[in-house]
Length: 218
Image 1: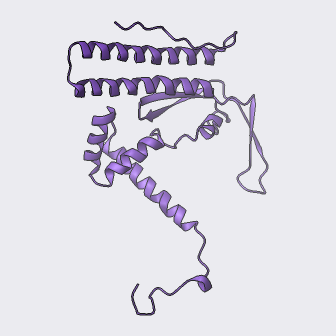
Image 2: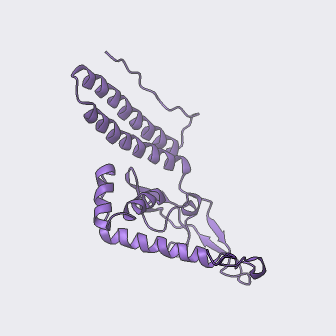
Image 3: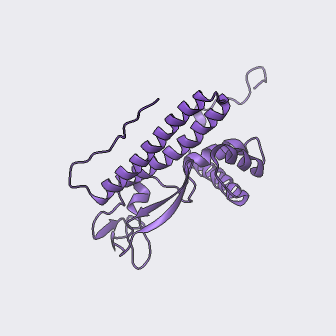
């Protein structure tokens, strides 16, 4: 019979709201972990097939990952840099601008490989969101789809149609992505490659070798 001890996350008192939320999320992740350990003992006692145990462990690892990602966001804070935020002008001749902090934080959805998470950010602007320091600090994507999820989806799209790629990825991660979103992401990634190639320096013509060898072969 397994005996488990509940691990707790301790901070120096007094705890901030962010630390309290972080501690709660980590503890939820630990509870899930110990539930998995108990299930493994249960499965072993009843001689359950290993592939069933394997899937149970994997599904719960995704749950643990979601709790830990939420804890990471609590540690990161909301990106509050004070009452105002100074941003550079659009060009070298434009003066810097000071943006006031908006009254209420704004949330944006973030679809990670562990499922969707809402990210709360302190934003700045004149009656609308013009800047969110946390977005830049965390390198958040323009769309809600995490860069890692985009990378994995892109690797499936290379060999399959978008609908089939989404089905395969959904089978593994349990996520729902529309075909339209997959197509848009694929186009955006392709346009990023073109921009990158356009910015590459032009090779020095004098340093270039002949396209064909002396025998006329490539």
